[in-house]
Length: 138
Image 1 (spheres, rainbow, N blue to C red):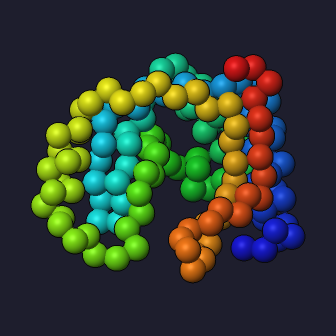
Image 2 (image 1 turned 90 degrees about the horizontal axis):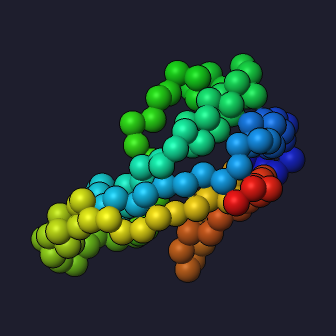
């Protein structure tokens, strides 16, 4: 999606509007999860700020937010590793993740929210940031 795409600008305006007054978002990172394409860390909001932002974003998107308005998030996550090729020893990875499925890994403070698009480059995935909002309250 090109940076000058009108939809990108509408998303950016909606993000700035939705984030106003929300402040920082806090999560407890509570364990690892495995998908066919990545290792993820599961994140549990410690208050209502993440869900408040999601609802405000859906409202601010208006008709562009048809998916956001219908979607209720069961969990939040952080992608830690994306697989670019088959795993050499998949059983070891499965065991590693299983041993950390419910481990308390960290507390996370999110003070910046971005709308980004990922592009594959020769050396890996690179983000292209289309919009960024920084919390005024940490």
